[in-house]
Image (cartoon, rainbow, N blue to C red):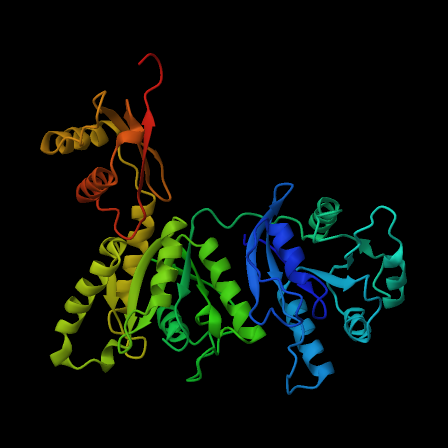
Length: 440
């Protein structure tokens, strides 16, 4: 189950970004005394008392906007309400009750979401009383905090986690969850529709048509798959609309809960930097990855060498792509789409693959016989044995007398040797070096 979302809303300059940074424990959102600094939306995972959640920092009104004030306020609040499980309505005790606070409160009294009214800049706690004036908003008891210095922030988080929805049941164990991701208008929805055999998702020529992440089941060759069709990705600097921002948030959440990530790219446009970042993000999170180059029917027959040449260039730029399979498909004509389903099952199986310890050590001995690790000054470096310590994704431990002395290049050598022996196609693989327990 994906983590729930808490959104911080309020008018400009009440301290939303300061509270966001305080909760996540690092300075991610830009904080400035000038109103309207937060133009893009920021989100980050957070955890408190064992509950994980996404925290969203929304921007206030931007000065100079051509939209009427009420429309801008309502648009911001409506989107936060639609996309979040809990709302933090932040106000400023130093400024007192503001007309914009009243406008937001009027809307919030009608919504069906848990709301916590938080009065910020209460620096004189526990003697502060100015928050009491915000009872006027009709949202409930104001909760006093000072985001700048951290006063009452722990109590605030205690309160917030009690408002989160109950933790749901885990996804079906036998289901393979597949996140379909990519930039806008590369044909993600069309590809999922072709895989499903019917038009279940809205398809249009305009970029960014898909706003929701939709879970769609499919049974194929005895396996239960669940496709998550996500909204198109854009560079963060271009995410200047609430809808586009929340689409990016959904994509991150989809990758978080997937076993396999299908990155869809346009055959004409190729793999962009944003695509590379998403593939790398999924890879580092332990998700299996494969790349579907869509609209291949638009590439002329004489250009077929483009595929091989393009793959080589990409793998030279990002070495981890060497372990990710590429499939050249057409959602429009159905070209090689069934092979994509087979590839998803293969990547999911490779991610769950377990190798017997005896076989792991046989391969390790052969690799050591072929090339010994570089020896540091002083005590010699010895690798004793190895074993697989986990799956989904595959993880190995190599026991050594001096694990800190293993060079990065030799670690890559072992990594490549293990892949040569067992493939792990499309699945991330990690090797950790550990010290042998007992007497040295």
